[in-house]
Image 1 (cartoon, helix red, strand yellow):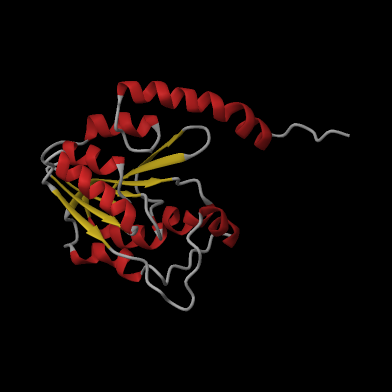
Image 2 (tube, one colour):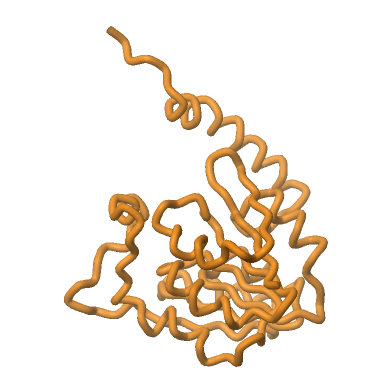
Length: 211
């Protein structure tokens, strides 16, 4: 007998193509946008300004986008090839308000493959002993230093827990792919902060405002 239709099937076989079409349309109006939800982009358009200092874990299209929105951006990347690509784009576009750091994955005995599908099998745990220097980089900055922080790279729980205290009161804290089970410890730590959850129907971007 054929398998019964279920939500997962509908979500990925039916909704996904529709949503991809919507993304393409949205990109026409907001070219070069970060790969967060369209609703979060509308929020960034209204909330960010040239008086702000921001930080992102995970670079890419977001780096060029936020550099144009903020006074200064600190960007932290773990992958050499991607860092080279984004650095070249910053140079070509003569963007000079980004402090761009490459912090490589560490070779530790208990390092695990950094693949989302594998990590999702860990029932919410997130062992990240191979990214200690990476997730501790934010600790070099004073508490309350940043107006805006986006967590969208590796070791997101540990990056986020470190970064929470680096956002000033009234500042913006964003976690992309926030629906993933393994990010529950970070969501729990932020539970008393006012939040807005945005979604594509497939993935979420959650925005918190620090009290």
